[in-house]
Length: 211
Image (cartoon, rainbow, N blue to C red; front, top):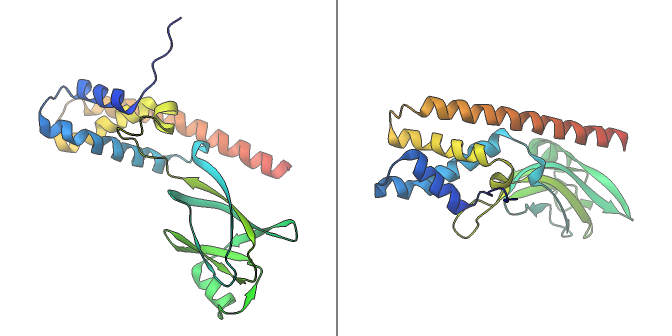
């Protein structure tokens, strides 16, 4: 039995070259950009469990600003461990935290968090100890390139990645009559992925309610 072909970055580049039927250097040099843009678009449309990550770290006493993990995309939940018990840290707006805990020099067990900026969280109250905390978050997939030949997209959404990359090439190529066909293929595949995505999220919510 012949093993099914597995998409890699190099095979994707070759497929795009074949579909575009272009050999000029200007187009070939743009292919990595087409792939990168397609990855971003697909990721923005899906909340797949393939990039749902749990990390555990330690807060710094007296420091309310916490570094987010690399490639953080969106926080799902946070908890802090106090005396061996995990306590939820609730999401609130930045203004709420500043009003709730205006004096950052005062310390206690954090009860709330917000996005301080794209690479940091802010918690309030300011940690009174080096508490262990756990975060569940969506992580941006490691982008494809010649040194990273596979990722979630190549394994679980290869067709979406191919047709998405071809669509990203359209503004550059201009007036390609195949755009409608590629758009239809991409839309059909994405609808299937979104349906699966919703089912996974629903299953996760059911587990949470039953736990």
